[in-house]
Image (cartoon, rainbow, N blue to C red; front, side, top):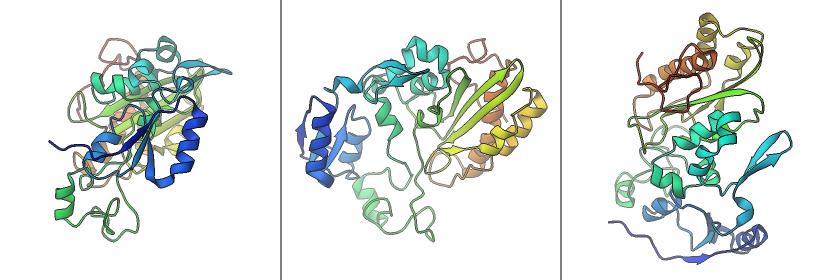
Amino acid sequence: MIRLPAFDYVAPRTLGDAVKHLADLGHDAMLVAGGTDVFPNMKRGQFEPKVLIGLRGIRELVGVGANGGGVRIGAGTTLSAVAAHPQLARRYAAVATAAGLVSSPQLRNAGTLGGNVCVDTRCNYYNQSYEWRKAVGFCMKKDGDICLVAPGSDRCWAVSSSDTAPALPPADGWDSVYLKLRRRGSFDFPVLGVAVALRREGDVVREARIVLGAVASTPREASAAAAALIGERLTSETITRAAEAAAGPAKPLDNTDFTHPYRKRLVRVYVARALARLAGLDAGPEGRPGSSGRPPSITT
């Protein structure tokens, strides 16, 4: 069993106090809320803070409330609370669905929305024990100077693994859906996440946004795919054109589960499924459009 290293812990009660601690301690400190990402990374030697600043006692970071025409979600709100919130499920289905698909029920009860948005990027060469990483000479992301995925590159290519970040663009009054590809039906990080939001007048799409997760180091907006929907009805032909265009911004590499050509191909499949669900052409696993259940099994 890998144990946590020694560290000091402070528990501020206000946001101002937390900011002051962070400013005073600088690089020696890290913020922690649920700890579902921070603690495993500390055990593996990827994070090495001397002090953890706990945010769980700061009430102003927790809860869902009104914010003009939209809603405000506190960064310290647990993923379980986000997934179960009736207003979010009704008005921002992609956000609620994405939160409900993170990891497992136990970790969603501890993990927070802010933590998932800021979750550390992942890679097959990085998310290993210290001894494993040392045996291969480490990597650019921690303790090394070469990206083992792309040795000729001057940057790290670890993958953004947040489910909720792609689903968070302002979309009040829009219809939205989030689909996730992973090997197992629970616990796993996304190998692909697709968030689609549309505003329609009648049957015609007036505004659209498509954001891809887990195909690059940050969520990638598929602007050309969204533009292909504007002024159109969600017919099979329109959906096919948009799905083809969505594959462009996806830059998967051989740094996570499944092969990268397969993940690239599944971008088209999952964008098409998301649009079909919004169009009512795919009733979803629970028999209704926009269902927040698990995505259907993979078929290509």
